[in-house]
Length: 147
Image (tube, rainbow, N blue to C red; front, side, top):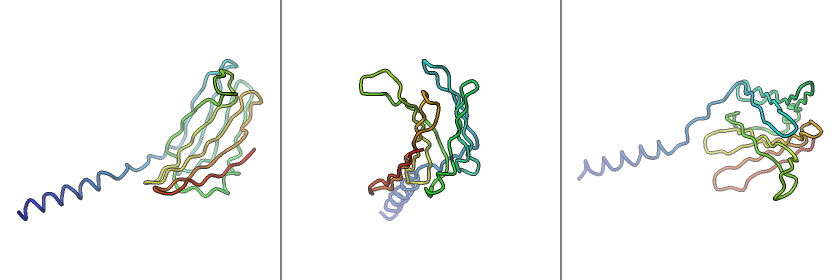
């Protein structure tokens, strides 16, 4: 009986340990391209030591730099661990692109932290940023910045 209880307790403890999320794998640099009707846009990001230090967009001779120093007012909890892109359309059902949204994940254990950065391909500049921070079982904190 004691061995059975010990086995059940051991399995329960190992399950708890395995339930923890894997640690984030911070990246140093990232380059990716998106293709729009207006042409290809190349993005480049630097994130040494897990902190976003550079974000730029390039199309031919056009270059736009995101002012990363403006992010200093947002005290990030996590480190850069991923990036994804989505299109922002002019309206629902429209196929006309209004912007490109870059979602930079800042991971740390159970904390979900993201920075959404909007890029307008028509004027070729970064236009806004939004920071979301969510702890388990709590309301998300949101901060916005117009550029």
